[in-house]
Length: 196
Image (cartoon, rainbow, N blue to C red):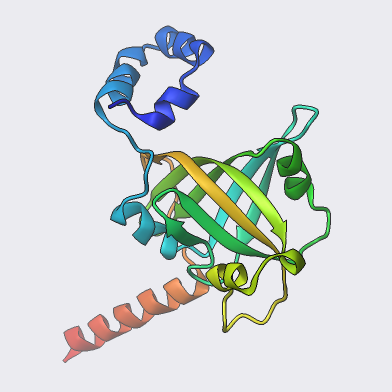
């Protein structure tokens, strides 16, 4: 089975550039031997469930790309099935650029980062956004966060078409305040044990 992410992204122009820079053979092996990467496995599901942020790209009807950050409590991006993600969309700056773009072209791309462990997951999919006032309570229940008090304005669903993991080469380690505090506590504990 071919690698679905490569099937989609390795267009003729991309292959030509890969050839020019000497990486075509390597990418041909990726495309033909490592796949299909079209259904989320336990690895991707576990990774997604531990994210508190992601970036999503859409394209406007005039052809301009747009990247939006989405954040929330750990696990706010829900895995609803092997090919579907969902999340509650809360009130933001009210520009609604991504929502508008997706109403004309439902293609999207997501990047999810794990900075401390230097992992990156890329997803391609089709996204639909529904007004929370017009969906059932069962739909809301799939994405709501009981301990998070912000009002859900929209519900977003992403039908995943393909995914790919990136190499960690240029990912700089960064830590949230909670991650840093945990590491600091561990270091203090080890220092105290060593001092005994």
